[in-house]
Length: 408
Image (cartoon, rainbow, N blue to C red):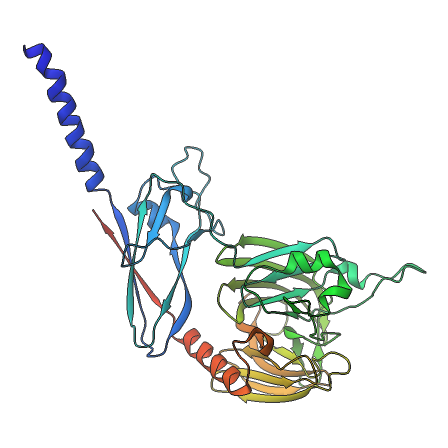
């Protein structure tokens, strides 16, 4: 009788141990807090993967779930921007950051989420940001989120045109804007439709922003006190993360002469869902002077031909904000802005409104740049744009704090 009961007792004990193990599975508690009274929609939260891995050993990106305080699963992303190591044993040690978003209501000062392992496969979440090299069109580089799209230009565009080819030739490191009416990605669709189509509004928005040889909406240069010295088109690119919530990429600019000082630049773009402005970290390398004065610019004449744009410019040295609101004849109104914390001054050249700051070689300069179009039906007036940009600057100066706690 003993022999017949022992397996039954062993099975019962095993079941109890498994149940206890399941009930005591660890979770990572993520507490968010901030000190502003205003609403903060689409705040992007980043948790180093090493912290997730420490709390949830062996967690894999396809078998975790992020839940809000009510237990509802929310979209998340895991990057490989700064991996700790390779993962030959498949224990989840090679990722960079866990990313998700929270929208604080006005007056809401804290929020709590949990990260847990899951037996179910995590779903594929809607793509809200993308970035890619555009081989279809003279090596443009395009990026977008659910609010706005952008592009800039590679070496093929500035290469000489073969006789009779009709190829466009343009040398510029300015940044372009494509204005969207829709939240889904449109860059691929518009390039597939072709140049003559995306310059017309066929229901999803349009490209009517003018860059030319200007800085466009957030390009940079070196200011010598009298003139702006700018790079040629980007020379190299690298995508580090590609949505669905955040895209990160770098553009490299080869050496150019800045009033006798050779300078190179690498721009790192961080593009978050739900934001009208991107974060840009520009790192300049140079020898000789201890610092250089760098300018970030907005094109003075950003409208399409025939639109007779009326440009209103605002400057706020306290926040380093340079802002435009442009009324057009037939294509709606739009705003552009640069926020450069720690800005020294403002100036203009023939093509651009400029905001200035000092940089040291090898130390990134952080700023924010982007725009908004009345056709998207979210920001339709100059007052709304000024309020949005002022609030964005305040949020940048008061980042959300992230606290982590492992719970059994």
